Every structure is written in C-alpha cells, then in structure tokens.
Length: 201
Image 1 (cartoon, one colour):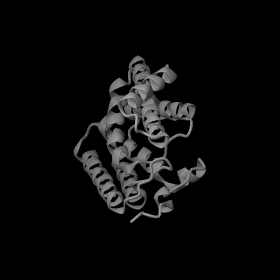
Image 2: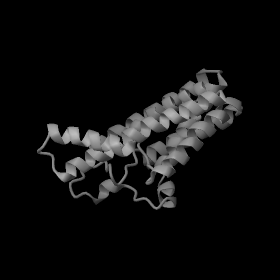
Image 3: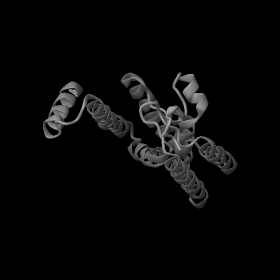
C-alpha cells in the first residue's frame, strides 16, 4: 500500500513539476513517506487505545507531546519497524500509566523543572535529514519550546485533574529524552547536524 501511495503521489508531482531534479524529488519522497507512516501509525494506535479504553488519554498525550515536538524536534527512528515499536510503547503504554499513576506534587515539580532545563540546553535537536541551519530559527524554536514547557508546568499546578497533570509532565519527559545528546548517542545518530553546514550562522 505504501509503495503504491508513493509511486502515485510522486508521479502526479513530477507531472505537475517536471523541472524538479532527483534531489528535490527525494526530499518530497521522504516527506510523503513520513506523512504516510504518521497517518497509518496514528490510526492503528488510536484504534488499539479505543479498544483498551484509553482513547482520551492517548489523544491528550498526542496533543501535548506534539505541541512540544513541533519546535523542540528530536530524533526520529531510522527504520519503520523501530518507529512502530517506539510509538506503540509511548502512545499506548504511557497513556495507560497516565490513567492509573498518582505522583506527589513535589515529584511533578522536579520532573517538570528537569524537562525545562533540558529544553534550555538541548532544544531544538535536529536530525541529519532535517538540519536546523539558521541560528535565528534555532533561537526562536528554543524560546517557543521552553515557553510551552513553562505553560505546561503552570498547568500542572493550576489543575487538580490527575490525568492532565500526568499527561503534561509525560509529554515534557518524552520530548526531553528525544532531544538529549545521550539518546542520540545510544542510537548511534549524529547530533547538532547544523554544525556540518558552512553557511550556519
């Protein structure tokens, strides 16, 4: 199914934009693959969560996490099966924990503070295929990511709904792990890829 989707989509794009070279088409292919994987993966995960009775917990984590992910970035699995396994663990396992676990306020505060520190030092964390070359853009993304982290921390303290508290702190922790240099090292992925570009400013 994925192969047919990519072939059909790339053919349409090439027909409309015949001037696109192989490099441009390869970038488009990468984007289409990512889109296809995201849609199918999300559908499967939400279906499983609905069956398990943790649908709203999963939706809440998806929303809170992806708000951080948009500007914080972080590593991506290098293989499709790795992406599936990690996504199932994160977006099925953690929503279940968010539903049942109760953490003291002090623990929530410590975890949130550690996450914000991580955002300050390491966000945004790029990838080899998506290097964040422009310094101004990196500063903007860092500022937004830290600001969202602060808003989440405030949210943790102004609500007494355990599920929301757990989801906010979980989203921060997941993003912290995905942008940390140690995580990149464990998975043998290059870090700070923008530094390899001459025109980084």
